[in-house]
Length: 133
Length: 335
Image (cartoon, rainbow over all chains, first blue to last red; front, top):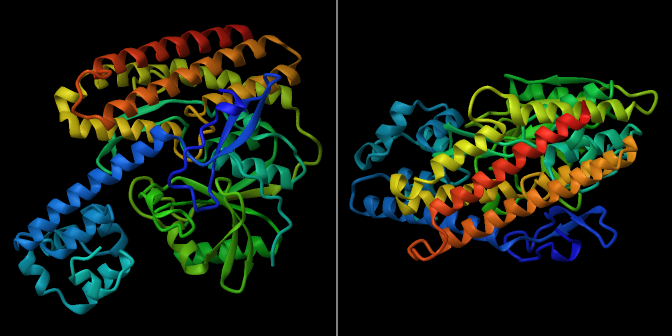
């Protein structure tokens, strides 16, 4: 790839100080570093990944609204926490987390455990109980 | 307190951190050289490990490998440590900073505050170099960033103890005894190339190196039937991201490796490596054209006139053939 072919398709890096550094060929055929703010296929890949995550989360949200699951399930889906991951971050057992994914059990969790969940996922207890992002 | 440390952006986090640390100790070599000596052009496809519910595709060897190997080859003494206790890990870090030693750390990116939200997956093998502390705030040199960044005590501790696949456990590494003279690069380069060839060709299980690419091609051929379009698209997107996500220098380290071979030609005084470099550039172009086709495929999931999974697998097989022949000849040349 030549220096002038290095893609500059603005995407997720646009308003940050992060850059993709490419190694590309200059006019003499020597490699050098070129900073790039993105490449379309890669932006597409990231878009697709987040779109599908949002789709999954929306399905969970519908379940929560239907009373089949607890808001915890939704927040986990949005933040990409699996049961195992949440367990190792929070110290709450997998078994209990699975239980808390049910709407009924969730209502009975005491404040200390709720606070643990909230802290692990970087949110307040109030946000945890609601369904907003 | 801030160490006088020159921050240069790099393509890849680990080779970038290693390059900057070497620079700090007066060993001025480029990032591609670090990658090459560290035998950092690789491929692995591990369908049995799951990351976000997807198999692991990777174009680099295990995290930490490049640093260790480069320092070994250049005969520089280093230390590494992991921790069980979070506060102990921060104390150990502070003590080293007090002594004016820049410290490389492995972190998870999910809680990394200066990363854009969209990049913050539960990915735990990112490297950065801590170079100062003022009150409660650490200054960090992250090669993927153009500038220095800051992290609070709590934030740094959190990312050093990220959980999930490959938890970093506060891992940190630093130079114990600075080098006295400029190390012998020729020897290091030759041994780096040799190891890289060995890794790409000789690992006896089918998940790594050229065999890994063939295996992926075989599996990918049936993805759309086996997994359904949705999941197959997600997997394809994951390959594209691993190939190009911040930190490969383009085409999954292939361009950076080509840059390395160019430098090797000069240092070893052997113009043949320049030819090899050109060939590696072509292979890199093939990887990128694969990424383009793959992206077109998953963007128009339901348009069946586009490149099929069958054809994508063909492309991969072609790449595997090329890499196999490339590394075989490179090895013959070096012997």
